[in-house]
Length: 424
Image (cartoon, rainbow, N blue to C red):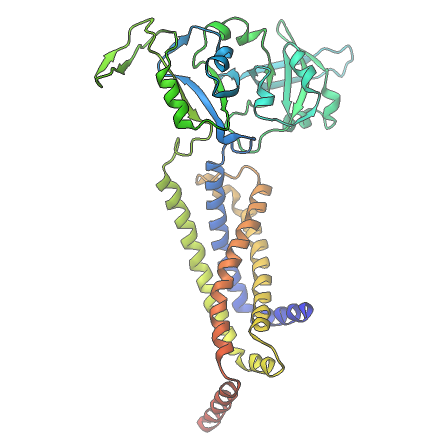
């Protein structure tokens, strides 16, 4: 039965090939616009959501420019609502390292890498997948470099052979201790990788006694702790801070603004979600963009549907003959729906072709396409959504056709033929 449906579908697609070419081309353009817009929205709202427990992850900050007078790592004891935490260099704290391989052979290599600096809890906090090396050796290696797999494969296809390789940069010695999988959609990536440290670098002295917003600190709340309740806890707790630079203003108990003085112990920590959807754009920005894409898709879909509907009514006699042979509404639906599926599969591949042709133009106009393979996979999901809409639209004419009596169909055709003969 399926083979018959497919045969009939290809026959009718070929029979009305000119109309189908025009209809599928228009539908492909509409589907591509919709896919690019929806993918861009998904990407912009999906930063840092792939980690386990991402909804409980927050960025820890201070209310003013200040130094926290205490060991930042003891905060988990002071605030039991925190399940775990990690500290790393500030967001723009990546450094460029020119590394020379320590090797006696003439094939020693030099690499230029952009690296950040993290503590030993970073990998476990974000559950980064270790592809080469192991957690024990990574945490015990001083100045141990952990590379993302994308950069490691550029250096050597056999990423395992990089483990243990030592490099020199100035007076410092570094060693590749591990390779981890780069997060797909994250704002916290460190260029080519990061240096794991706790006893040297930014973690040597001041991280324990002079913590401030120069360092990015991430915390994960326990499952049972709501964000609102934790913020109330922070607002009610007093911590010892030393202010510096622009000392700023704060509100007192009466709601009046007062100048903050140095060594004021009323300073507080603040938190914000790791993935803050409204940090860069408002909800209306996302919704307006989505409705524009949906409108373009529906316009092209309705145009294609109107053409297909007219084709369906031109095939009334075929439908009537099938009904006399015992075909029901379900058989007619699957007959036409098979044609729709084939047409939409063609639409998908035409959209992929258009994406490859216009990707430069699309990115120039502010749409982010990090990896075309990711876009193509997402377009398959969007295609299922469009097929669902199409199945509802096509169910209407199919239901009308099925409700027409077989006698009226053949009588209408014969009357039409008589009129045409008389006109001649």
